[in-house]
Amino acid sequence: MRETVIVGAVRTPVGKRNGGLAGQHAADLSAVVLNELAARTGIDLEIVDDVVWGCVSQVGDQSSNIGRFAVLAAGWPESIPGTTVNRACGSSQQALDFAVHAVMSGQQDVVVAGGVEVMSRVPLGSARASGMPYGPKVLARYDDFSFNQGISAELIAQKWGLSRTQLDEFSARSHERAAAALDSGAFEDQIVFVSTEVGAVTADEGVRRGTTVEKLAGLKPAFLDDGMIHAGNSSQISDGAAALLVMTAEKARSLGLTPLVRYVAGVVTGADPVLMLTGPIPATAKLLTKAAVGIDDIGVFEVNEAFASVPLAWQAETGADPAKLNPLGGAIALGHPLGASGAVLMTRMIHHMRDNNIRYGLQTMCEGGGTANATLVELVN
Image: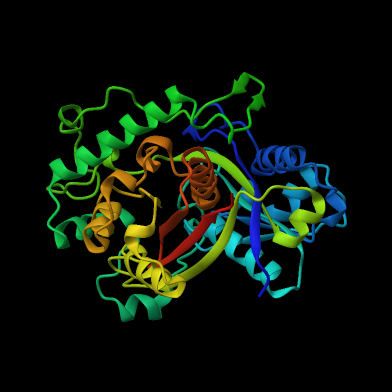
């Protein structure tokens, strides 16, 4: 197995629903990060063996292998292939795993991984418009199977005894941390500006400054009349793209590139498809065992904030230090552009590790259908 590193990580700002990125086609938005990745690393594009691209709603603008059309939109050589991955919200995290697997095994040497989602143009649930993807046998196997992740988030809150106040406190803290990160310039080195017909998008759009528990208390439950999950403690509908450059450590040295992090280990697990969003808990346990690393050895955790109950249940089960959990805010404040989110979180985490000399970073993502990815990377000094 060859030592595999990430030498470049870049993302667009995350646009809010119908915000600054809403007019961008997914292929064109992908092209922005692909070209920025190439510019920052200075690589000869001819050495890129493949582009593995995550996307969830592969219909309409995002259909017909958006990974390949991202390559063509970027003006890259026609000889560079591209493929599209769908593991629900973990699509671009899985894209990274697939890229690493190819490089580690020796089948390929240089692979780009990443993803895109423009939810303003291709709304969540678009793929269900022409049919029922679960099928009668799945529905027969799970009598209480829900298509709605919000219901799953409610069930998690109930199972772990989480109160609405706890959920709202976590959500307010996400906005507070994200605002502080924006103000400190923590995202500047990882973001590429996106030029649009109405002006440049230069920063994440979803942060709501001054969010408080008191303000969130006034929001009505979104999924159950007497529920705890509402718009303010759920991830935002968003637009965005991100890209990572993967190669062997030896290849990086030969090209004069400085690795950002070393890929240590990655896992994917299945879990209860009714609770659906608890997968990060067993995925984290499996990853730590595989890597022979303890939870206290990790300096930063990126646990996707699909709903506030997800990272809170994960924290309760793992015993992770809450100060290390999503220190720059998460999807509740910064948005969740589905197919791009895995690569967005990894980009955010890598740069945070570099800025703060953090050795280990762990990223995990809950996913529709009850699966979850978890990835461990190590800072390269």
